[in-house]
Length: 281
Image 1 (cartoon, helix red, strand yellow):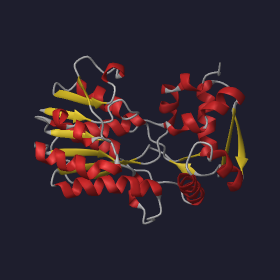
Image 2 (tube, one colour):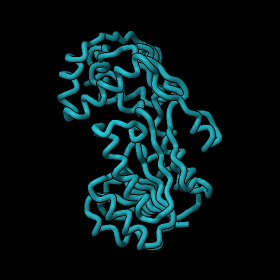
Image 3 (cartoon, rainbow, N blue to C red):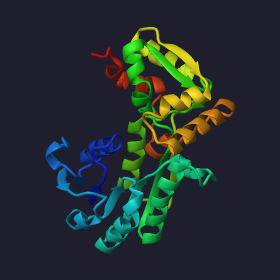
Image 4 (cartoon, rainbow, N blue to C red):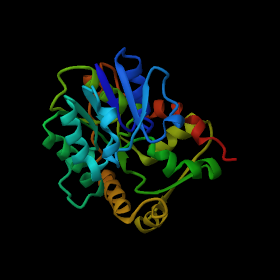
């Protein structure tokens, strides 16, 4: 079986690539810069860009299954090209944000556009819909933990079941390698919802040092986030934190059902990323 991976050098894509490279199937990875990809030696690396669908013809040749990174601007054209090339199954990296009914939600619009394009293409599909990634904490909290041993955030009691990126990849790998996942939508979460205060406590134990949590007002949180996120995304994040402070985010057993093993805990994720929270130079 021939499998094409897009977004192969991304946070989830690298884990997908590694999982498929060990499967014995032919794996082809699409990347803008093959020389800098640093992917497993037995993976065929080809140049191409989802934002330029005209570059994909060679990459799609003889491909049966495809892992699709979400690029809404070209999703319809890419899915159509995949169908014409004979791709039989597309596994989409989507988001749990599509499950809400808020059409103003930036993430929901982004990912649902891709899902609809694949649905309309005529190719069989599987949607992998992770909830919030634990890895987001690297850019949200990493600098302040490294430099000050402090986390400043609004809604400290907002509770989410943060998901390890390797678990999202494991679900995608299973959907790519096994039959029976066609038409399935998988909401992927971690095994337990933790408040932001509890997340900081886990990080402190893992790093072996005190980390202080300082609660911010919503306005102060907006100001802090605005330097790294566009306004619609800032409001989306503040809204789901406010909601999660009242009702904890969802917890599913999708990882266990699809892969046969339990989802990694937040403590597992923290241990896997301990070097990223080290002292800043």
